[in-house]
Image 1 (spheres, rainbow, N blue to C red):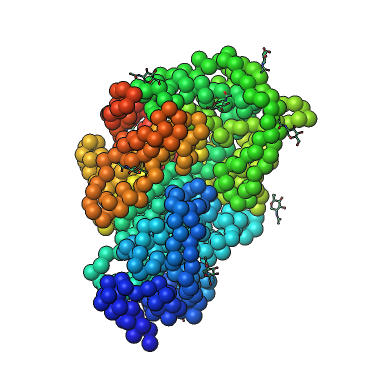
Image 2: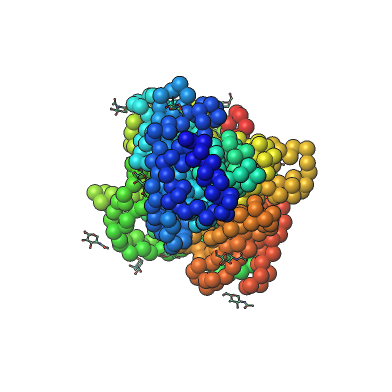
Length: 588
Ligand SMILES: *[C@@H]1O[C@H](CO)[C@@H](O)[C@H](O)[C@H]1NC(C)=O
Ligand SMILES: *[C@@H]1O[C@H](CO)[C@@H](O)[C@H](O)[C@H]1NC(C)=O
Ligand SMILES: *[C@@H]1O[C@H](CO)[C@@H](O)[C@H](O)[C@H]1NC(C)=O
Ligand SMILES: *[C@@H]1O[C@H](CO)[C@@H](O)[C@H](O)[C@H]1NC(C)=O
Ligand SMILES: *[C@@H]1O[C@H](CO)[C@@H](O)[C@H](O)[C@H]1NC(C)=O
Ligand SMILES: *[C@@H]1O[C@H](CO)[C@@H](O)[C@H](O)[C@H]1NC(C)=O
Ligand SMILES: *[C@@H]1O[C@H](CO)[C@@H](O)[C@H](O)[C@H]1NC(C)=O
Ligand SMILES: *[C@@H]1O[C@H](CO)[C@@H](O)[C@H](O)[C@H]1NC(C)=O
Ligand SMILES: *[C@@H]1O[C@H](CO)[C@@H](O)[C@H](O)[C@H]1NC(C)=O
Ligand SMILES: *[C@@H]1O[C@H](CO)[C@@H](O)[C@H](O)[C@H]1NC(C)=O
Ligand SMILES: *[C@@H]1O[C@H](CO)[C@@H](O)[C@H](O)[C@H]1NC(C)=O
């Protein structure tokens, strides 16, 4: 029965060149017959009786919290399939949804979209616009309705390791491992037909993408990762760093004062890249040549407002915007505020001066440093971001709390210690910085890695650091320039001038890439290796301009208002090179 159904579909597809209709293939029986048999995927037992299949229509555009790159406005008919599996001998259950395009639209592709914050993507339809099967997994902890931070603890002190490994890398890897034979069987693909496998995501979706490259490398052909929230222990604890600087220096700047510092920095550093366009395309030159102290004494003013904070939509727990009142702020930039800004941009060091982590690039917004207004004392006070506070409470202190109540007694050494604890504890799950990705490379995989140069959440330099770690791990015997050239054959890194976290920046009207999947498909399927990344300016004086972005480690330098070159500038590159010697082990 199963054999004949699968064979029938295969025969149909082969004989009539994709003439099968969606309703022909979108049946429970066809999906059941395509499920990989127990014993064929180690550790995974599929449950045929749980299969559902029905036709559905996708809704246009959307995506998860701006982390997905999907922007099309088309709708697609597809086969909405759910399957369930259990881990051999475990009696658990994982549900996966797949969206199969109509046979006439299927282009032998499979596509995984990343999530963001503490969520995996719950939308399986992201691949339809590329003629690709898409998928989403509930990861065994009902990830369609729970975000991972809600389930990481069973209670105070008890970590849910199953959920942790599933969120960290396993759920997506299993989803893809099952998807490949399932897709082949569903459409009756012959053994000689390649099924191209893609991944695309930003922020935690970027981390998730790297988790796949590192752990399931041979499964993927093309991976697009933006602003990855990897080096997870350092990345998440770092969200408490800005507040710690304020607490340590005992100065809580009004938000307007910090905003003025950022604006003045942008204005001063904008021309250093050769063009005055409101964009700091070279934060390295800004770091080398601009002194924040020159802003001291400049006036700032912000009208009173009822401010609606969206946060980063990072945690479901902290979701839902909150409205706070900010009084008018009128003053001049103080030395104290500049010291706070400088301390933040310098990055975390321990009390002996050893570096623990890197920071946001100068000219990036100081988002985590925002203070809150206390109307009872008419003053600005500490505001611990819930991103950092919750991570430290739950993942480091293992307490079922959403935030830290204060920073009493917290020093820079305390923060280093939190990073150290989390790095050790989650080294083989969430840390996601294994630098040897030979399996992926040897299987022919390609990576486009991008990062906004003014990202205010995941520091831009954290991507550079990982690129360096991969280069050093995999090309230890090659010269610097040979290793750079060879790595660019399969792993390319691009910084996006002025861009914020996984999107454009309201303070800098710079370019942003919109067609990364086209570029990747062309690279994977047609062998067209990119040399630049296509990005378009969508606001400001150069609205509509296309900029073919420079590939790291070259840097942009405008020679006129219309032309830039991608130059090699060692002094600038050196500003991106960090060693985290506050830790006693290598941090990749
Ligand atoms: C595979 O194993 C699962 C779990 O034991 C079971 O529910 C399922 O029926 C098995 N599949 C087949 C085709 O026997
Ligand atoms: C897909 O199928 C599942 C299982 O029947 C159902 O719960 C879900 O609502 C369907 N989704 C869409 C978009 O039709
Ligand atoms: C967990 O620990 C926190 C902090 O000590 C405490 O406030 C809370 O009551 C504890 N929860 C339970 C269920 O004991
Ligand atoms: C900073 O610049 C933005 C626009 O670029 C403006 O909306 C904002 O009011 C400025 N803030 C301050 C404090 O100057
Ligand atoms: C803020 O909201 C309060 C209460 O709703 C209102 O009285 C006040 O006028 C608002 N202020 C501004 C600047 O919008
Ligand atoms: C800000 O304060 C200065 C000095 O006190 C004053 O001259 C100026 O009018 C104030 N600006 C606004 C917009 O209130
Ligand atoms: C986290 O806790 C701090 C200190 O109690 C508080 O100021 C802040 O508003 C809290 N943040 C959130 C998002 O709950
Ligand atoms: C760059 O991307 C835009 C937006 O997707 C597209 O319209 C344009 O054709 C692309 N240009 C190049 C040179 O690839
Ligand atoms: C380049 O742009 C700047 C700022 O918009 C303008 O002042 C300058 O005249 C332009 N240069 C040329 C050569 O057009
Ligand atoms: C980065 O700095 C370290 C230590 O100063 C040095 O050994 C290394 O060669 C530098 N790496 C690059 C790529 O410049
Ligand atoms: C590294 O080792 C030194 C010397 O034993 C110690 O003082 C320091 O606390 C260690 N650092 C961390 C992050 O554990």
